[in-house]
Each structure stands twice: as C-alpha cells, then as structure tokens.
Length: 226
Image (cartoon, rainbow, N blue to C red; front, side, top):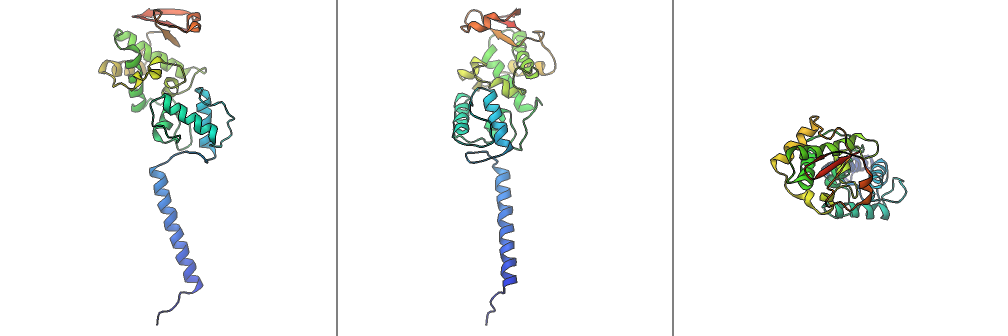
C-alpha cells in the first residue's frame, strides 16, 4: 500500500520545485536580458536619460517604462536602422550606450565601437582624402570628451540629427579598410583638426546654425570648426 507524503515532505518537494523554476528563469534572463514596457528601476532611468539626451524622449525621467518610453525607443530604433520592437535588448542598448547590467558605458573603445566609428567615417567621408577620414573620426572622439555631447562613441553617432549618414542610412554600409584604419588612427590619438567639434560641406550645408561656427581648417570638401 502506497504511503501518502506528509506535510513536511510536501513542503520540501514544493521548495525543490520552486528552486528549480527560479534557476531556470535565471538562465533564461541571463540569455535574453531585455528592458521593456512595465519594467521599473535604475536600468529604465538610464535608458530614459539617454533617450532624452539624444532628443528622442520628452517625458519625465522616472524609472518607469511606460508608453512614452516605449514610443521613444521605437522612434530611436526606427531612425537608427535597428529592429523596431519597442524593447531595449542587446543591440538597442549598445546603440544607446547603455549596458543591460545597469550602468552607462564609458568611452571604452571596444571593437564594436571601433567598427561603428569606421561605419560613420565610411558614410560621412567616403571619397575624402585619408586625412579627412581621420578628421571626421576625430570630431566624433572630441565630442565624446566634451561635456556638451554624449560620452560614448555610439551616443555621439546616434544623437538625433547629428550626422547625415545616420539619417539617410549610409551608416549601415559596410566600411572599407581605409575607413576602419582611419577610425583606429583617430582612436590612437591622431587628430588632424586640433580639437574641432563640428564639420560640414559648405557646398551642401543647409543648416544656418553651422555657418556660425568658427572654421579652423578645411580638408577635402569639409570645413572643420569649433
């Protein structure tokens, strides 16, 4: 005759089942860390701060992922060639300059950011002399160092309205070797501009404000300014 488990045995079985389920969830979350509608906390606050800094979020930074944050994420994803799902996963977080572990990444210049910088150079300075490519990369890095701009390469590049190559999709082209080398040279300290924060093509520039900046030098078709 089979004995019915007593309360102690049932409780132990329940605890074991809950621990197994919790362990399963920890593996799932580790493999697919995302921040999405309904989430709250420091990670949401960091995402809201970045979206506001880049001009995509106009709401209150309150650490609550609601409709305004969702709409801002969708707008950011759509404008920057990312998967449009309103969820901050690995790719969207990297583009924002935020880690899903909960801290804003500094300008650490890892391989992915080097490649992103090369893509920007390719989109913005394709056909320019090599020194002009390095100069474009240097402007990005000068902005990273400036308190007036985001503090990561990805943050500077994806700041709303900052670069035509992002707006027209040329950022998504595969960079050539010259563009990647120019990015690395700039990261290694070569700044042909002497600290400039802006550049523009005087033959095509339509933004009246950019003409108010003080031009320091011209390289190829670009004026470099402070």
